[in-house]
Structures are given as structure tokens and as C-alpha cells.
Image (cartoon, rainbow, N blue to C red; front, side, top):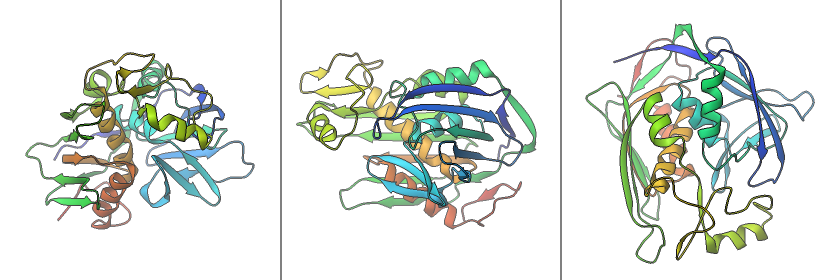
Length: 293
């Protein structure tokens, strides 16, 4: 089993953007944090609010996104931020945010990942905790979607995703498996954007979502293809689903080693898998590398 040292940012950095679901103008600041701090969000617009740990125990249900909540303060749409942190192996960070939702950026984690690289990433003296999958763990729902974690004969995380919305969908079936590390994250995943079907946009706008965004800000896909935008890769959609998996898996609060195989899995099912894996472990991980038995 391979272990590594914990890491944090070398300096603070600040980004701005717009929220998809709340339409909020968002300012978000990423600050270095000490060993064993983990990832914590702080709502600076809520006086006296406590930090919200980015852990599965604090996750709450929101449609089509991942959210965390603690003592009345919440932050949603955190999966792209969490994916960037996990992909770059940044384990300790205090995130100050002045809105209830993380910014959309361009629908991907690329801008944020580049900001992390520019700020610099430093190693810390404590080891990062690891869970290595020893026996298959799986979850599924009534629609046939499933996700499974299985042992792997190497000390790495690999994620495979099969996407198939059916014959009538303008999104063709796509399948991809990637080993996750900072290099593959930057070169293969960080740029992949969130996507929505054209016929879903009107319904979402009717609910008040995405009022400050246009098809140029993310991927809107109609029957004739991408609207007012271009794909970065032909399989960008499945790459973004792997990005989402990585962001949701990060709520376990440690490194994961094993093979994760998903078919049509979304945020809710991803989080159920994290809960199931974590429930087999002690509630407080130490420097020991734990194994799923």
C-alpha cells in the first residue's frame, strides 16, 4: 500500500464567479491550512457561522449537485471544487465563501486547478490516511444505475464510467477508465465541463436556475449537438462524470485505492457508496492505512 504526505497550498488565492442554482455572485478564497485540518468551508456572509467540514457526515440532499451543511450554514455545488482539490492532492484547505453556492466557472475544474498550480502546493510532515478496497462494495438504485468499488492489484485509484442515455439521446454512449493522479487530472479530466440537455434548460430556468448563464458558459446539448459551444474532447461528457465521482468520493476525507466502476451513477449514488465504504471503518481515521474487510 502506497502512502504520501499531506499537502496544502503555499499561499492563499481568490476567485470569483456565478452560481448555477442560486444565481449568486460568488467570491471564494482558498487558504493554506495545517496538518489534519482537512477541507472546510466557511460562509463569510453568515456572521458567526461555524466551518463546515467537507465530509460525508455533513452531506445533505440537493437535486443534481452535492451540498454540505452544519449548524444552519450550508454550501452547495461543491463537487467541482472538491474534485480540483482531490485531483491536485490538496488535503488541507480553509475555503471562505460569501454565498451559498460555489461558482460555476466554465462548468469544469480547469480554472481552479490552474490557480492552485500558480499558488503552489507544499508537502506537510503528516501522512495522508488511506482506505484500500479489499472486498467489493456496491450500491445501485431502481433505475439500474450502479457504482462499485473493487480491489486493485496496484496502490492507485482508477475510475471507470459507462454513460448511456439510450438511442434517442443526442449524447452517444461513452466509456472511459482513468487512473487518478495529479498528471491525469490536469491532462484528462480538469477541463471537462458539466452538461445539460437543451430540453432541460427551459424547465431549469422555470425553477430559477441558471439565469446568469448561457450555452457559452457550459455545455448545452441539443438534438443537433452542442449549442453555441464546442466539445473539448468527443467524450467530454463521460470525463465530466468521472470528475463528479472524484469530487463526491473526496467526501470520505482520505485517499482511496481501488477500482471504481460506475454506470449512470450520479451524485446521490456516489455519496451512498462513500457512506457504505466509510461505515465499515472506524469513524475517526488515524495515520494507519485502513482496509475494507
